[in-house]
Figure 1: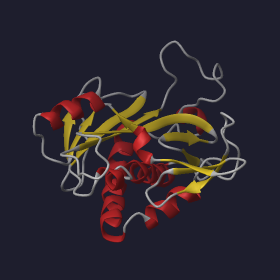
Figure 2: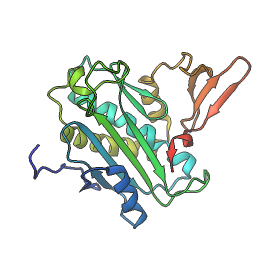
Figure 3: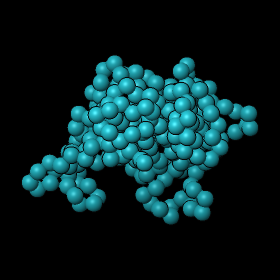
Length: 233
């Protein structure tokens, strides 16, 4: 990556080089009144690390579904740039899997945690590994991977950020115009082990509710885990 490189983003989005922690920087900028559409990003070759400031008009319990929107968008972005044999799956609420192993995550936080009130701002974050983290070689943790180990050697963080930003705007517009239904369908199409028992033994992952919450079937009832569980303080 050249030092002067910066992402070419679609209209309504603008880039802010965050050097180390784009998610924290986006939160800091949101707290001081940054306009929505600010995309903070780290200039790195080993991972895609970025976040975007949003200003939802929906109540928090509805707006938090942008976490699923972001996942669907990165799934489409990887699909557009990666070899066809690379499979992306979404592990509720925000983890991202490539060829079955954990490769990154979506993150989300908001100005408040009141479900029926629109937050003043939200920050949606994306972290995706291109190379193993420092001190960890590939193969040491079988349930974790990185894109270069999965046949994506020709892919680089900056073009993937640009692609994600374009797909993100498309999916946000669909979400605003059509509701969660199309996002819900796209997320379910790549859902990780839907219909199978959860790893913690708490029940069977049977689907999502109308707000993107996880439905877990136990022996005698179905439990809802709301998507607001994913909100970080």
